[in-house]
Image (cartoon, rainbow, N blue to C red; front, side, top):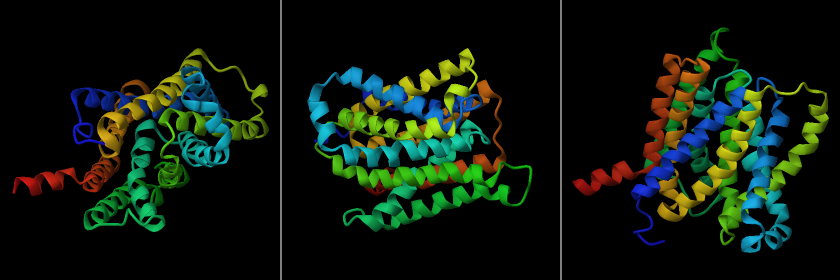
Length: 304
């Protein structure tokens, strides 16, 4: 990728902010929907509707069907790690915690990605800056979950740990996903969403028996549709566009934009309130992410 393509142009910045809003909105929409729809069924609806939308969007272009047939095992594995498992963990967690807090905990994904890549790859080893970023991120996570271990009034510890488990799963998926280089990115997204939706369907049928559930209210239906079409299908297409325009490092900045979006939506529309430790933990995690990104340190080094 050329240096010109790796810069954040005004268009790339605009897309990045839209993506942060869409992915921040996923925690908001999920918090609404999970009040009436069980997590397994909600995961299937999100993944299945998004997969269908991307199939319609691609309509067989880029050799979609032959690639899916050839690499279906890898797509199923990626779908489990990047969709089915983390979405399920987050949705179960959100039965007890708000959109803002869940998004903050999930923002630790790059930290776990760095730790996992250091163990499983030979070309992404820890540096001093990465180690400092990981340490800061882990401290921020401890600040977030700490009160739940000493008081009964805080959110249950298990509900706080589930989004962290999702972040770890995303980190594993990020390392595993390197094997899809050379496959058009929208095809990869379609493949993993198709695999994960087919995987979670029988789980939903057995665990939730959705045909016995009461029909969801209109606002929940709208939240599910938005979760699938806006925060999943459309978000993937925008993410891949940002990747093409600005590169992976710049695209990773969306991690810093997701929690503020989810927090503002939760505060204004769901009446959520963050405690002091939530704000402090988010600040420390953001500092860790900035250290991992490294561009501030590079800018200061260049300036001196």
